[in-house]
Length: 521
Image (cartoon, rainbow, N blue to C red):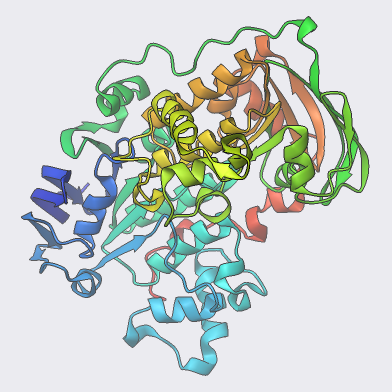
């Protein structure tokens, strides 16, 4: 491996008001290296990437890209020097088609004539094996979360960068898509690109990275060789204390507790028939490759999409599930996976976001009882360890982990019988993830039943009492608690009776060809 440094950051500090985001942090990435950056939400990772890309002006410190100093507050110069970034939240213009977003992302001297955008975009996407017949014409805003993440990476590679920054690139990806992305990362590495890889998924980090740098509370905790570092060692560096167990202990539900949810022959768009029961005090996982009906099942149970056939019984009451209002009224609450797009109102405060679906419990004679509202939200903020300066802090200024905890708090305030947790820790740091696991388990001790859809087999094996595996829209296997582990879940997924077309080829696209990455567009 060459020792040429393509990115050097020395003594970087940045403060926002009274919050110190970075304190004297140094970071280097070599050509042909994958250097992971890990830490809890709020540890300073995004700020450090912002400084590297020229979007955040540091209070102190310096940045060099390819040996050339970066001027302060100069993202255009950073791009010119060869730095490109795939953003976690996306940087595309939603109303514009994919071909236009690619066109404007490319350097001006590499753009084709405007009327040849579609052909150029299709060829470019084919270079990354993202070749869809209609993909170039698709509005970027209509892409799924997984498609958006893959497209962000493809768009970042249009510039043929020397340094590629990947900010949480796999949060919405399934296992096959993660493998495809990692092949692209390996191809970048082979082409001599320095890759800075930010992720909360530590097994992925140790699989793909050469070195790992840890930040905690804006301070540098060390850089470690991935080949000689364990996941538990990284967790200890990230949170500042050892974790003897990643998941809270589970007590098997008693048969006397009864069934809070009965699903019998349920059919809906892209899934069914599905039948299962959920007991009070139980956490049941839903596993499976992406594209096999899991999101549609959750949407139907939440009342967002009417069922086509079958029965759903919650707490002894048979439901029609023609609306979310009916589902919520019956005691079924959805904890959505896309917190920004489906759950939170960013400009509003923690209190308002937490209580918006539960105002009835805080009103009397049409008047809101502010004291009671604040008391209950305060209690959940303490339980979930939500880091916020006040209950009126707009949630858009909280870290991703704390935003997710606000969504969890809103769900808990309804005191549901059934919680549908869809990717409950997606894009959440290690510490916040454990807080959410503990809070979910505490609700089962109060009699709730929880259904968890997760693309992380480690999460499913550690959190759940049993797991159902879905393939082609149906449940093909049940894994009992005494057999639950990561390998068992993955084996059940891959040996199912056949995956859907979408699952075999994620998003309808082929896998990246390593040899093509780094070639000129």
